[in-house]
Length: 212
Image (cartoon, rainbow, N blue to C red; front, side, top):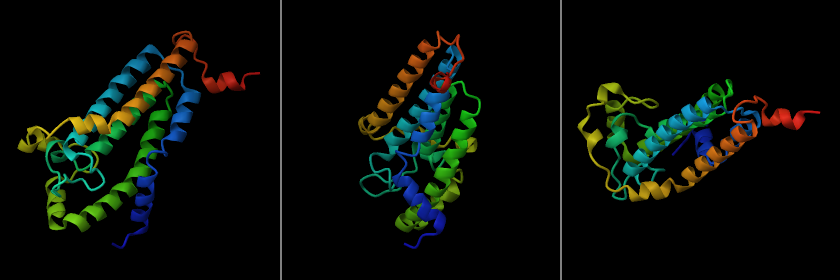
């Protein structure tokens, strides 16, 4: 399978996807000045994103790299009937929620920019791979569900959306590491909130470190 430059970059970024958020997380911790409002709103958005991820994983199973069940069929039900990349949409919502918790105005736009810089190439690589595996079936799916990044409201009544996944157990097991990371982040933000006199002091950790 011959890959273009952007597809090759996508393959590399896919392999590094567990590490690319680390610089953003470091910035979030250093510059965070959380308040009750930012923690509450951010947590709600992040939980929504994680629920979207879990919902997608429940349909796709553990074979997320090929987006097929163990019998090799292309997944087109549930959230995959609304958009082609529901897990990445969940990632985006989750990441924005985590950034909102920090109460740093420039962080959510940065998170969105970094997300698309990484996942546009990743999706290009995945689509090439899926076309190679499923051929016309995947092309037809792309025509039926043209939305890559956001749910298609026009397909909200799609019958397949409401079919139950085969099982939820693998989804929760697969999301264990993500949930652990998110909870750890929540705890760090809560500690920073406590250190700032429960949001009364808008002094970030980086300001405390650099203070004379």
